Image (cartoon, rainbow, N blue to C red):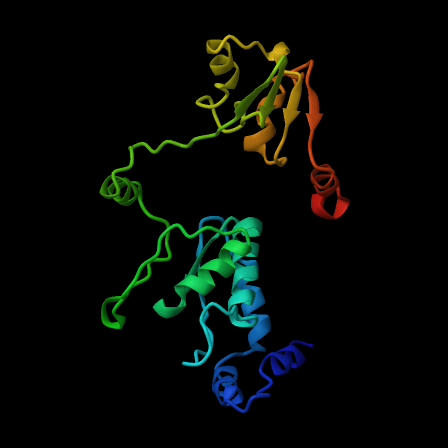
Length: 244
């Protein structure tokens, strides 16, 4: 099966010599290339950097604003799966002329570029795929004028409509440690008690958005509020295939 997948993925319909690239690569591998790639990806751990190289054929008479439907789209799908499924760090490498269209493709996949590095010289380019040490991470933060230790914002929004109070998301509570769970105190500083909230608008059911909706005993913090969330969210998180 994997050999067949390899062959399909390397069909040289346009006669551009793709098959001539495949054969030497296959000769160096003890298994089909797609099987080798799948095996390596399955061993990906949280925090790992995975390098994905992509591009598209450029022509002087074709605008770069026209999206490529081959490599960049596949890389965006793979990068999303690595980020969301494995909590890995996808590093997408492409030509500088393609940053804008490929960046748009990645954003359409729900990804956001953390760093864009331009004009890398082939002779001095070294990609470090290990996790940074604490000293290295501290130096990187300070070099970008970021606080050390870093701040992590978990935000909620209070909406006042006449005599109604709606809260957009409920924060993380103490799910991420004792530094969280400041929402109730911040509301109290505004003169708002948890029982004053009559509507909870939840954007999605990630723990940093709903962890603060219950207390340590599992009781509702905003007991008088109606919970409003898109039906797709509970359907997804209660799906046995997802839980498996």
